[in-house]
Image (cartoon, rainbow, N blue to C red):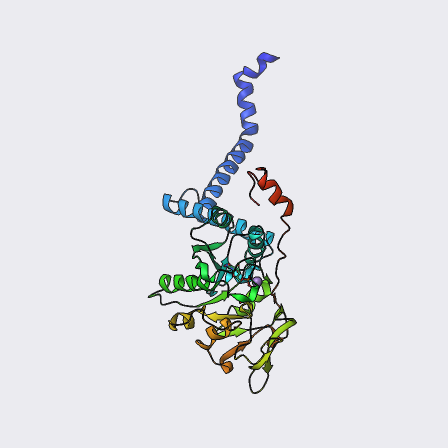
Length: 345
Ligand code: UGA
Ligand code: MN
């Protein structure tokens, strides 16, 4: 029986019977391959792609991956995507004087946590010291913020001593001026001067909303400040007609000052500040008039821009940190065994 398959007569008969099926199968295979090849070439890939368009595709895929990653970072930190999408966002330059004390890093950390939520912000941190400290240097380096680190010491005659009452000498004067000088130098000859300058002391409490309010400052913008000057809130008084404008100030202490505001209560347009070369802070301002004297060099009352819902919202607080109790630490230091040996606090 097995031999029957190799019988030439038998093979001929079989072939006759199966030939049409085999032909049909062959046609199907050829047709399928043709179709596949045509579809590849018409979609422009594979058979016709050259090297340069392949590397362009690779680049596009890499960029798409990067966008996905950045979007996830924005989401993680609850940063509104719409704000980052605006590439024309003016930069907010925040100038902060700071000085060494047990709770310095805690204060700076509170500020950093807010600033990280604010797009297009550049922090100019100015140490009241004869040199930049390792603590601040490392802190800024790992902050994830855009920053400039400066130092400018206050001369001993003007330095507030622990035994002095707070109002005795103005604080942060030369440090803020160092920040302004840096801006003047850095942006000299620059044509695009869209931006805002804000003087943020290191111990206040700032909301993220505050920075949205000041972003489009054209001259000097103003708003209420909470917990300052012996009252719950100091604020500009605003009249709505004919257009919203500031008419005066609600303040506990010296409300008759032309600009009865704390440092935390205003921001200045960058171009305006750079135009007025004499605009800086002075040791010789009489007590409590430092902000007022500075603003008089820049604007008149009617030019102020009232923000924060016509100055009805508090978005910044003039908080002060209690001096930490170091009684036992002093004892440990005397014994040569400080608690922070080898640990940065
Ligand atoms: C108030 C105002 O809010 C300040 O803007 C103003 O500079 C100050 O009064 C004043 O009249 O000089 P106050 O809370 O009394 O603020 O001042 P601090 O917060 O003690 O100091 C203001 C800034 O200067 C802070 O950023 C602080 O770190 C810095 N500072 C203070 C120094 O750089 N060096 C110092 O020796 C003391
Ligand atoms: Mn303060």
